[in-house]
Image (tube, rainbow, N blue to C red):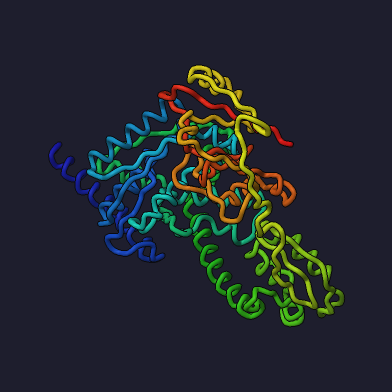
Length: 467
């Protein structure tokens, strides 16, 4: 009897496993996420979702390489997760990349929240891995309930179709093969293939809106309305389809009303469209302008059918537009040219810098007590080797820095955009170079070059004193 029950259990497990794999495979095919035997990166946290994703993608024949981020935010638990991921990949004979991040340093330099800093660091690292050209995409383990949570969060904050469509199966090089399966499906699959996973204790804390939805609100809805999660997930799928159809239609409107030089024919929109405000908003939202811009532009048009005012300029973070005789024409302003290209050779021992040397122990005390201010930076003393030339100048278009705490490089313009600097504030930003390398976006971001490490015998502290 025991043997027969064991056989039935094994057969049931195989059926569950095959069913789960087939659903994932069908989802990948439906949205053309990958081609057969593509080489991909799988984001592996060690949780149930990512473990199931890694295993099922490998079983479907894709060449997988795992990537694990250790943010060191949960003490021993973070190291436990890394160890688990390494051992899992070893048992599955899958290569793994592991990256350590200093999240607090990122938050101090960028002003981001911890959650956003982790997200930015993760996606920037994945982008650097993809830049090698070896991988087709990065697969992440978002599943059905994650998508329901996204819908609810966007609904609660107020959103149109773009927000209510939930997460897309593909966004750029990021793919989500598990959006059609539930958390229960995932756990059943892992049990059927004999794989364990780790649990992030912070997921049980209800400090974040998403966690309150996940742990309190959605379980209550499911209890009161059994099957609600699958029904809401189906609605997300319908909305996603509606959004794709809507997006295609907006693309036709772009062809109709946007000229080759990027100018938007507002007069024609007002004369030909039944819903000119929404048509104009959809066109403007693609270039960084919002509903307030839309309403202001329409207010600047006199008359019901487009006898336009001229001369007004409307600005987004990325572009400016001039309203001229019913056409909204893209123009270049001082945010899109070199703001302060002139450079001067400086002696870092004198003004506008304050120079100090210390040993590593003193540096550690400063760092551990959180006394590092934004106008200070610390380098290993090797930065002085070879009689380098230091130059100080303003930001130039195309400037890149190799930021501390991440691989690859970043545009300085993106760093300033993240910080939401005004045009006036951007003119005040100063760049410190060692020979031709940017080593400091003063007050904002430090380079990982000449990083202070436990082996550093001498540490250089530079303080920038603005004139």
